[in-house]
Length: 296
Image (cartoon, rainbow, N blue to C red; front, side):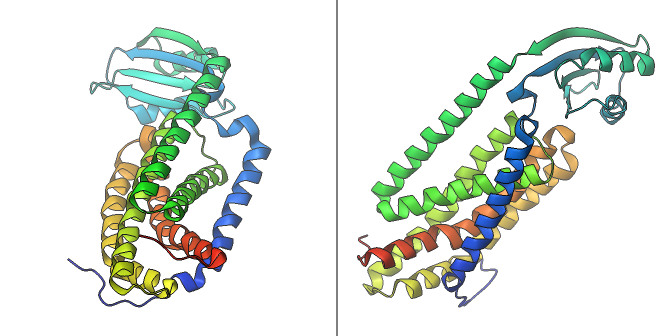
């Protein structure tokens, strides 16, 4: 199935504009992230309070969230429902706010709930989690770099890896600018985005290699543009399919999955964008600067 046929867009002719566009978003996001400091991170990373409560009867999670919101506590909180009975909930709160929230819940619900667990997530534990997350991400990137070097060549591997970094930084920047916090679910979404981004890039790189072998031409910009246009229909169909699924999670998955699905939505869009305007463009500029042929 082809959504778009016989396109001839000059994608790489506009690559410098898209370099500036991407760098601008990332720089603005990083500036705001530096200004906000630890406020960028959720309880999973900076520590906080954790409540495990169970109600005697079904309780609407939206009503529970609104009740906690009435306390006006500083920082974000999350409410996660356990099971399907709408009675058990896990509440993650900023540090030293659990007593304030419990007092408010008692005012609202009386004795219709019990506290099954109350604990503190220490900042030291969260720092460890942060380091492990970064380590896991870097190991994954190194693996991708090695795999793509073997499958294509080093220039292509670097282009794809830079595109992954680009997508991650773009998503983080937009999260910061939209006032959302980075937590464990965000890390999970970033790893998902990295996998999606490299998969889309590999499809384009495969077509580039195929066309290079057919023509043996050194007019790389024309060959790259032709390859991107030939895979454009597949690229659009893939991203639309994934976006429809993510939009369903975004609108119907509840507040717990809201930030997660928001990250995926932004990441999938920019993952497609970077496969065209970042990964391929970096390879082109590298080849032009080094004046060497691509060996595939």
